[in-house]
Length: 377
Image (cartoon, rainbow, N blue to C red):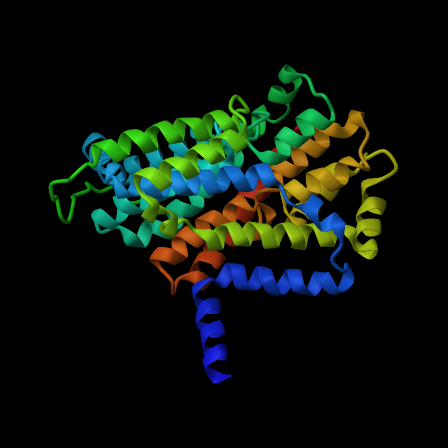
């Protein structure tokens, strides 16, 4: 018995976020017993895309291409501040092309390699948090930048120009805030600690580069996600099946557990009735209700849940709420879990420091975004 408890404790320490999520989900299951409705909680396309991207990125790491890119970036940008700017703004604009979680999965490993190889590990938490904000906010003006945007764009049959203009000012404000935040970074020249010669595995690189393109195309819905899944699995099985061992299955499990947690929270009558009463008969109060709701059940479930109470006339307010509401606490955006997981992989004892810094910075960004949002009304 002691051996089992010890293993559970070791797992809990290693997978802090997943462990907390499991406990939270189990508690909600007492209020909402498991049934067939649970199957509707899961965003299977998101999970498939996440698995494919994790698999491809694991393969790309193996080819040493991230180390090569990091060396090129250090040589191109020279200083700590400019490199961090490149990572943050790269995440921001890449998020306009793919979803926020995919943007983070792509750029976070690169950020770690750059900072670690130049002895700047103390800036890892700050950089990761800035990249998370960039990822959550960068895609808010495009229909496919964030999952909640895709849902609302389809649900309300929004016009593209109306959609693009709804959050343009907030997106521009975030860019300015990210730039100002970077000014607090001491700007010193970067030097590689160990400038070793890199062995680029060309054959594998070509395979994973092609797979990466297919993952992006599936995110754009150009290639069916099941086709991409089959292609990724078969290709890696043939080329290098060991890469499957390096996929972050705990992150996939964390997303699944949070889907259960947020889905159950939305089905607890006391909570759903309370939110419905705040939203109003037609959704006239959905802006405030949506931002608050994101802090409890995250942005995607909030978009799905509150859309049932919101008329099309107030759909822009809901769109603003679930994007601006991505700021705040960790759970407000599930994509933020990706960053925390990656950070703890490199600095396992930094959980408390990271959470405090994450909450403080995100709250400051949220306050500014609230001011900008309400001034626009």
